[in-house]
Length: 356
Length: 237
Image 1 (cartoon, rainbow over the protein chains, first blue to last red):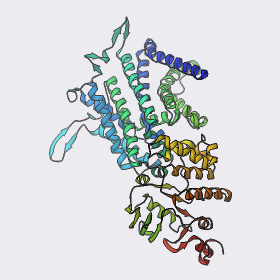
Image 2 (image 1 turned 120 degrees about the horizontal axis):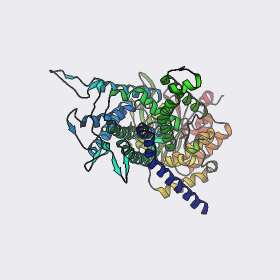
Image 3 (image 1 turned 45 degrees about the vertical axis):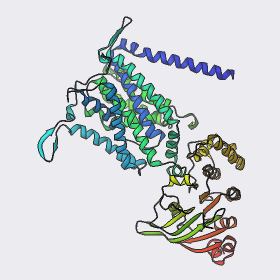
Image 4 (image 1 turned 120 degrees about the vertical axis):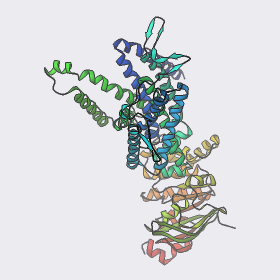
């Protein structure tokens, strides 16, 4: 019993230290430059996205290659309803739930026709779905109706939507920053804290979901669909639920992304983005929340770190000349790192303990 | 007395090809009935139709006097019908204990479920030794034991077993049949689909022989076992 108490104490101390570190992180990053704070914020968004996709891919075993579509739905919901585009400025407590709800609805729309598909076939259809959403955003700046010549600009096409409202509550605008105890916090740093809160909510939510009755049903579905049915699990409903819950998280982070960036365009929601989020889940450890978080943090931060390592100055110092364009070298190192991880840790960097 | 499970004029087709051609059979309460036949005779198609995995083209399936034709699989558990699927279908990345609990997914009497899990462990000690082991790492025979134990946790009145002997060593097959017999003795009605005609008929009360989608022979298991036609077709002389 005493060791258990000591263990719990250790765990508590570790949690506290992690908490303090997470709170101080943006302040230190701020000393290095606001660009680093932005990287932190984007990383948190990726953690949320990876957690959401993990529900679909890692827990329920449904391979989804179009996950970014839900991110896009959340982002565009916010962008269209909180900007001068339609001259609407709805508050965040309407927009975030609405974006998440619409994304979940999109999840059901994707889920319903693909109920009978699995594996590769499902992957192809979801990939198509992701592309359809992106192409719609790209082309919904001139929507015509068959019975009239007028066209309507819904998404502003490839130019994207600018001048999006940030988050503000009680008359306080997060984007404007804040001075507290003599410490100047920028808007980006404040967004970090907002994102952190939502990330923690997502972690707890996904954890509880995964360990619920529904979570166990998802696992059964992942392992063997026919046996799952034989257990009395309504596989149709729980598949739809997996798509909806995954999409919900995606929509939520999409809204937060739009609020922080102040700008969205279809370019941010391409196929590569879906692949990246999937890579975070797989590389971290499918179905294992700490692993997925690690995967997201690594893959979101790694390109930025490599950007500094692979830049022209560094090459000048090492080779005396620029051998490879920094952007190419960056992708090269990044891809190589992913291949190496998958070769040596095929179950991911931090898989569930029982899978070792 | 009416049958627990009554199948009348059941027809199954894939596209235009008929796999099952209007077959009739029934299982009475407390019976162990076996449906035997060679590869491609239609055994699995029959079971798939009974368990709602595919919709029959014609005919009716009646359970306890209620028409259950084409009812979705997951709804059968609530009626007291459990399926132990072909190829065992254990949840590979869940451990033995979690697999057993999944069998009780449709129930919520936690204390009683845990008591029954213990009963399964007593009945199949091999599973108790492996309780924390991932199901995917069990041997084929152990997986079959687990699949049967898991199906029992649904508290079925009727247990449908799809080729429990498939791909197992003879010694293991004997053990599996010991377990099946034990379950039958405790009063669970069993419909056993088997390719191993000898073993199935030795253990069953009654049997049906399925050939090219039709029932060609039916009757008392002992009689079938001695029938020269069965002998010629399945028992090697």
